[in-house]
Length: 114
Image (cartoon, rainbow, N blue to C red; front, side):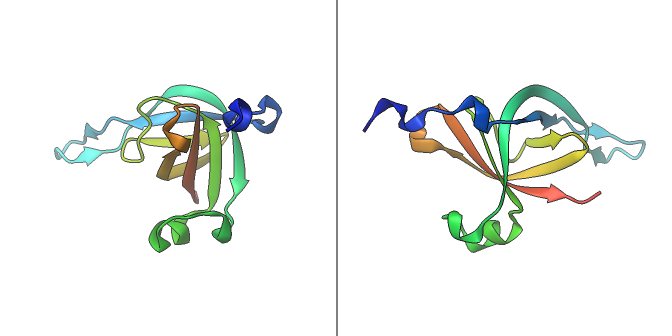
């Protein structure tokens, strides 16, 4: 397999996204309230979802609105992180570490309507 199979063309990543982590706080009643804070900013490619392009469970595929491709980010988790692009917010549904090479992440995301 050629070494450049996992190369990422910088020109393909035109969107600057912020990775946010949830560190819940407590309200006056002691209930957990989501509190999002920026942990990193990365270049990424945000692409519209295409049902035929994903090999994922039906449940994730039906929720997916976009696919995001970015360089590997250690510790990225759908349980803790979300993406922000300008005023748009994306929940991370699934993360693929392509070929387990720690080079590129492909994320299936759902855009939140505000």
